[in-house]
Image 1: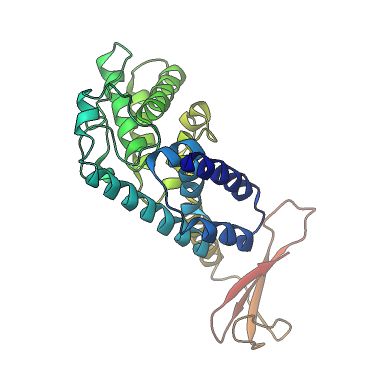
Image 2: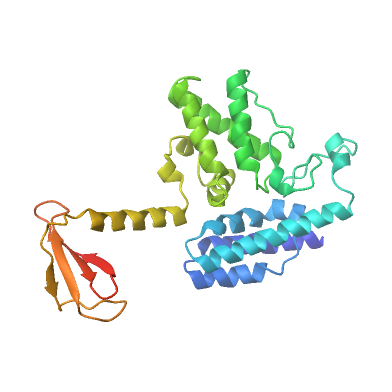
Length: 291
């Protein structure tokens, strides 16, 4: 069948994408995927949706933007195909006798927008037997499924595994358990961090490891970079104002190319390590440091 050959081709492309070592190579592969016509079955069998979805949080803006564009176009195409087919009401009611299609970009229950996918639309319920734990399973599912293209059973399994790990780590449904579940939910639901959700669904991040992560651990690469920049800027500002700053023309600013700078030195590491030099350009206020 035509779809079978497409799946085989896309599986090879996914492997190439996962082994790509630089931005140019990734962009080249993504550009070959951009015009591809996909269906729910193709997305499910090839796992190309997961592979491209993870790149939406890539450190390179051109890569992340192109990945977002491709995923959006694929979701639109699948939704249009469903609309032409009269929706998925019959399968949701069990009239056809067919199982839900894994990898679908929309739930198997009636829905007009994939973005609203959650435990209610997917008819997912916790199976722990404890009301509090079951509600937490459904909460985690809501976060994982909000933009997932994976089958309901897979996402539900991940939600149960995450809740079970938290329950085990915290020793029951105590205050720490509830606080941890809320923290995981908030970070999973973050629209700017789709890579976190995708990494759990595709198995590259295990529920056990995820259940122990802090908010900083779960932050997107863009957020980590921004936090690092803020931390460095605050470090510059925190240096004692009374500390002597020496003027020098020994350093050239990389931004304005002037040699009008002031600098100060501080021991930021162990005593046997060299001091760190902090330089500020007095012309454009550019700052840098070196050891």
